[in-house]
Image (cartoon, rainbow, N blue to C red; front, top):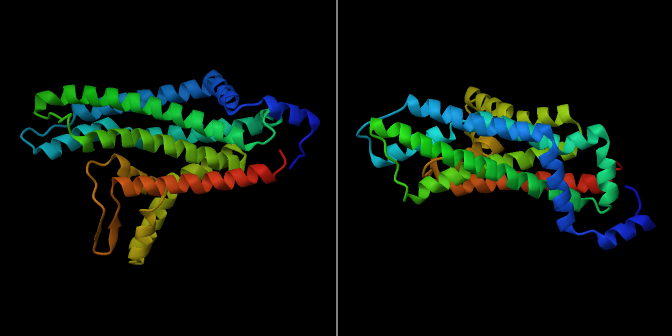
Length: 278
């Protein structure tokens, strides 16, 4: 790690975290890749949601089933948009390492950690807002498209709104987790491979091995991985239960597990950022 020079000390005396946040916001919104990725995320949410709503309907279904139908249409695209969030999360930081811009960033912010945390806050908030607006608009469109088939969501249902907000929060947390992985690996290709492997590949592999060797504990491990646990955040009224030795997390429990993954990876990224040379 480089030492703090006299110029760095002068910079520290005038540097504020608000200024670092503004700098990261300018960088994020002026990157074409960022704009395109968020546009793709929004488009996928709307397009997939409309397609699901047009091909779904169950007249006379119980209210809980109707809630779940609209919710599934509203969040159906998350299986695809989570890929966008992960890729963009890695690129937000690994792109600076690839171009060498990280040297300028850390020269301007000699303490280093405020730069990382500013990236996390700005990227996390923007991802949540884009995802939340997209999911909300999709839920309104889905409700309108499903009405002719006799499906009417109860907009006064707290669990319904919790699941919608949970979907946006899931994408934001997943993106932040990918950002932390990008900070750890410092390479775009490696970071994307690691993030997508953790989210998409590892759960299926562990579950398959667990089924083949009839190891329920191994199947349970898969449910505590980021993707499997985080998906409970946008499940309608998901209960916390254990059936035949298999754990099923509730909304809040799944969210806490995903937050735990994000915190652990961010702590590791922070330690490495402080100890490594650029």
